[in-house]
Image (cartoon, rainbow, N blue to C red; front, side):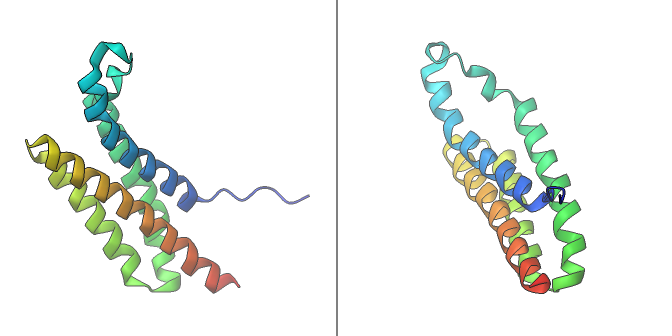
Length: 124
């Protein structure tokens, strides 16, 4: 019986989309405050942990696979996504922070999807 294959790209997509959803919902959570009981989601430590985890997973998956499929757009999309995340994180404007963080998280997730697609083409 074959062992299930652990795929960092799927984990990376899930974590990146979770980051995007988190960034989209935090303004609503803050607006409704104590009524939701979810104000812990606005803790910067959660945001930093998810960003750092996403970066580690992206580095562990995208960089080694690049040397097999040689598709630069995977790394370009991921780098652009993380740049948007860092720019959004450093800005003080809440509305722009949300837009950049959601767009960046979605771009990183898309880079994992591209990586998965190109890796499957190689192994097909």
